[in-house]
Length: 302
Length: 168
Image (cartoon, rainbow over all chains, first blue to last red):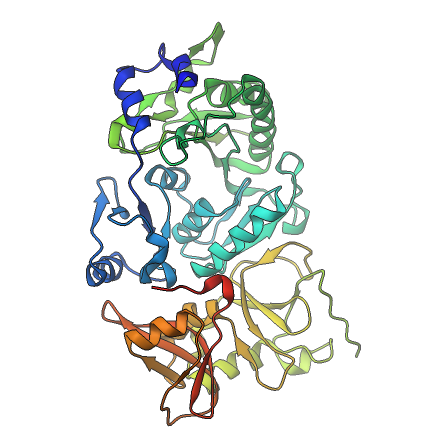
């Protein structure tokens, strides 16, 4: 927990933040409308005697009263995906429509990919890429269990991703749910901070900048790019946005999320970031008893 | 005609047998007809979905559009196995499209369903066809397909793949 001390200057009510980070995270699932309705899922949980509670901002996201949501009938049938509540935010913000062309740049193990497919009604082209071949098999099995048919899976370095297999045409939307230092998963993985290292944070920030730049380039003018991480580190969040705003044709817009959040930070350890990064959303664990998360929405301007 | 099939790329199935260029490759029409004949799944269930082959006989269902052939890691859902005497749907295809089936669906009790998804074979009475059936059970007021079983000699053999099995 000492690692988190570095965020005392930017987090209001820091003691509540630390207290929330020490508590285990409730189990949560997302209803998969490709295979079932919310009513069918809640009826199946009721039949099994599993308690459930819907999130205030999304009736397809619910916490469930079991440690093993993976061992329930709704999970076996692909009616739900075990996914913590904040993990449903990036696809909600990207908000793709059926029939669009969408790129998920760092997709494995597929929680957000399958959420995007659901929002697209399983129609259009969803390209799910990940540089890690081993993790792609988890993505494929999740996508298949959830009944997704509109996903094309690639194994490339997202930083120089080629549009060639997809007709050379840019995407309407792209999601960069970036590999990160994962500090916000501390409630799920109590050892998430054991290997924490500032050099790693700086190194991964370089990768994040490369992926987000490529996502902006690969998206059409007027299209949308969402950037998200599960870390609190400004180097990996606002610092990445600030860099890409300076290098690529894009601007930050409001996320439109109806969840409690703090604005992006504009000053961090002597660095100053573009004022517009305040439009990003920081979700802290003490707000709604969730994991920690960061999400920002960009519009491509050329 | 040559074998012409590759494990390295996805090739879109031809629309009809007349357009076939690769020997042994199923056509889209044959695939859809098979689901209609075997399971009485209405053909329009597959509107907007193209079928692709990667590796001998392994057919994938993909709702998006890309040029054929394409060399990538995955394209939609592994859907069924062709190029053998008895074609066989995957567990995931049975779950996704089997809800529309009205023929060769074997309805299991909860206890039978538990054993089926654990991968066990079990003796069950069944008056219908032998061969690959869609196994289903009642869940939340629906007839929820579990996967594919092979029915032979009074026994339903579970074909749930190891990684998908569950013990409730």
